[in-house]
Amino acid sequence: MDQPRITVYGADWCGDCRRAKATLERTGVAYEYVDLVADPSAADRAQQISGRTNIPVVVFPDGSHQVEPSEEDLQAKLAGLGLA
Picture 1 (cartoon, rainbow, N blue to C red):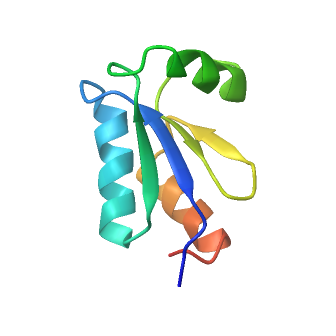
Picture 2 (picture 1 turned 90 degrees about the vertical axis):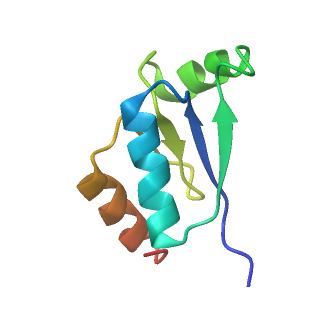
């Protein structure tokens, strides 16, 4: 069964980004990772979504997003979407 797609805008040097990715991987949730170092123009998209320059920006299938989510906040959102 295909899971709805989650998109994570981040950078490998960012600890919060690494934590968000690890949480998604531990939970077994499929996601697309947009590396802002490899694709600097994507930073503009992330900022348009969040209105901020902080990362990661995690975009959910329901159109909502979180910026720099804690592990608990990310888990709660995943659970609310029925993904965790």
